[in-house]
Image (cartoon, rainbow, N blue to C red):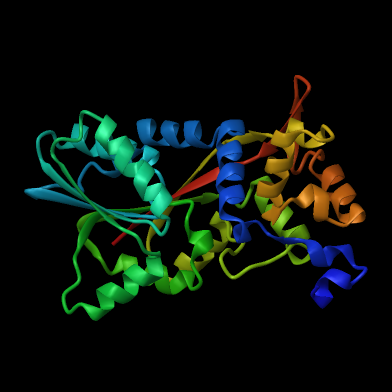
Length: 301
């Protein structure tokens, strides 16, 4: 038995959610089911994206799109349909950088079931964004892109300014980068600032919001526009003892594997109380809705 296990301090048994891949995937699924995350993104794609991509394909015989952290592809395919509507009949090259083989498999399944992707050529790379960067830097001539998107993935990047600079350097004429992150006005921002130091950390993930990103882009002298959209996550089940859905949502909120079972009682009680406060959540029709506001940052040359 390791020494860590023998320590009376209960905090030592807390471990990062990323140490258990299948539990992370399941808690993320519960988050999507209990939040308006995808609906919020859909609204942005419907209302704002057509204007943003209006000129990316001008005078081009092929539109090149790079998806960094494309996940299982649901949002990627929405983006592709908007580009197709803007440029009917134009060939699209869509390359996906995604470290999870499981997510790539789901993405390919989704493409196979989708009928209107005939003029899209797909390529998937099972690698992280920094592995992609290294590979591109090793190759003599790097590819230019018309649209690059990074949806909810900059949390998993070690050096964000270097990553922003690198991808900004890959933009072709009229090209744009779309970044989606939690907003600096969200409950996540308050949660991370207040409790981040007391939760298990791991190298995989860092706490970053749109406010941090705006500061980095300003420092780099990169032009961008930021749009904030309201989103919520129903965390009512978190306050029902022994509720399985609530347990998984706790894990997602705290990025801690089995938070409910391993967290010191005082920490758990404190977060539980805070999550019901107005700066974190609103109470509506008997539900507790956590502030999951998103920021959509559009970077240009």
